[in-house]
Length: 191
Image (cartoon, rainbow, N blue to C red; front, top):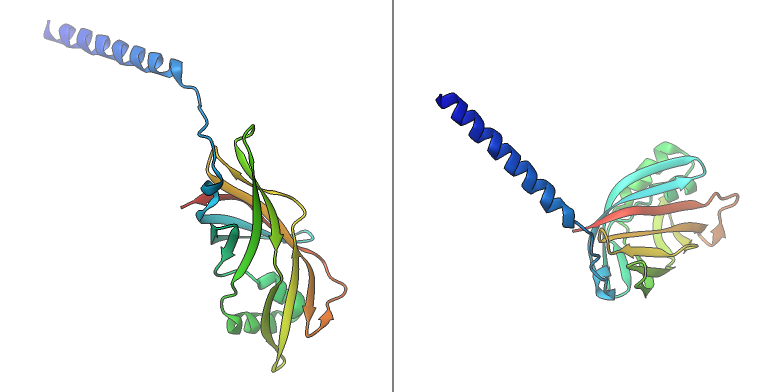
């Protein structure tokens, strides 16, 4: 007799809980939070995809966006150095001595209310540093360009953008032939 009462109670409780859960889902509609230009500012963790032709490399990096400036404290220059120094052993030695390279990208913002995004017009700067090649320190200047807009997406508070290294100059001489190095951040999460 007690078992029947307990089973009936459990059955009634299960029906009540499932009914409540179905009723609570009837009003689940996404209401986008409008983005503001200041939403772009912050620290991000991102997946950087670097490609040269068909060779693709991915790395998790951190960067900051503040006052129309994206700053990478430790910009990955492995592909650039390996383009300059063909010997893999020498390239690894150069990378070990190089240390951290800081890189900054300027951008201008434009609010797109219809799509709840902020468009970024990127203005990549020339990145310059010195590398030791065969015991001689040479100046390296990489001309960066952005051929597409970047976006701050309000739905998931992520920043997405891409740019490329158009030309590498070592000691006043452009590297030729040269295959463009493309950098893409398809998704980044705001910390």
